[in-house]
Image (cartoon, rainbow, N blue to C red):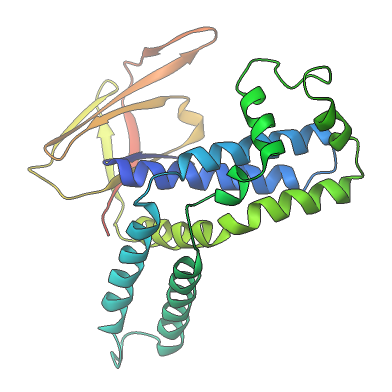
Length: 251
């Protein structure tokens, strides 16, 4: 099964982008090669840009507090595991405390590093970090793998409270909905939402279907058009019926 997620607002869109960037950074830092570490650093620059929204930290703190209050209402409920509830509350409280402990602008430690900002500006130019452009960076890439990894982990560490908080929020968001089964007749599907407050929709379909959902939605209507990949050409609309699973998520 392949899952496609479509956010309904800019806040969830930003969280999903950051989640993807953090996963990529972690993946490439774990490798030994200097090419992988270059990708990890460039991806870290993308995190810096994406997380620069002034209200992102406050949004996450407020959302975590709202979820904490919701969970507290389940105290002493015989149908709820106290151990699981306490664990969830502890995780939220730790994440909130770590966010509150973050001082200054997100990513300021990178902005204060003149050498890294020089690499960032060159990396924005296609092929701009060749050895003749930034010889000091070329020298750094030839450091031992463990030295490079330690540096990358140090530059990433101040972002981790942000990563941990958005991981909790997105996990709660994904778990908030109930999947339903639908069929797109001749590859097209429309659903009237009537002013729904959903923040994200998730589509799951079998990989063997070999179709791609093209989603457009607002709080009043959702449209899904399924297309077939066609090599180097644009995907073309499919005429076959498509079975899929869809979940509306809302915190």
